Length: 244
Image 1 (cartoon, rainbow, N blue to C red):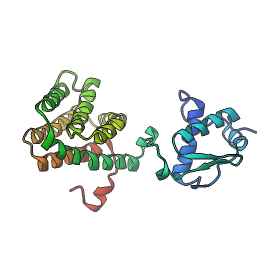
Image 2 (tube, rainbow, N blue to C red):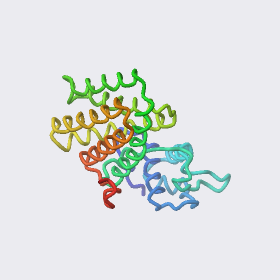
Image 3 (cartoon, rainbow, N blue to C red):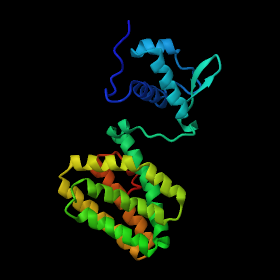
Image 4 (cartoon, rainbow, N blue to C red):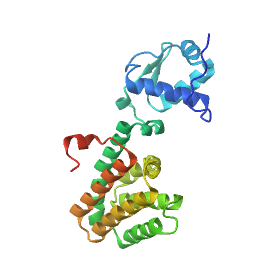
């Protein structure tokens, strides 16, 4: 007897829900690397879906680089680190440890990006940052436009490095950054969050305008740390005192 289809959000297409379920099984190690996934019929019965849904879900996993198919032998799991595709699961942002890892990644990437930008940013880039800061402080300071301005501020710093890979990756995680901004705004009084965020962005801007790479790195690192704390993240480095 089939159990009800996995309840991962009715608005999400069923094959995607199955693919997300299997992704978590692989990433958690419950489906070990190089092990064969259960047959389509078994998965369909277990999850309460049709074989066609399972087949489409496995196709998504192949596209994401998490499984490969041996002709006549079925689908096999790959270790997540062996995947050639980067994919971030938005469902995991509810976990404080995973959220902390996102901020740790941002600290590594954006701290150094700020240092590079301090030595490379052009007047037009500074003008874009100033305009973004102005939008963050304007009448829309607690609304969506200020969030868009926040993202633009970070994207412009990455663009100012002149390194296309840094810009690409910052743009790639923009949706996760947006989600963490809203998490912080929900967790604390929004005026306090906005005031702190603006002050931190101003410190980054001032360091960039002064072409001070050391100060820019410090200001950006402080901003990432404070952002993580506001969003409720468990920051891995803080356990060793490296954030201080």
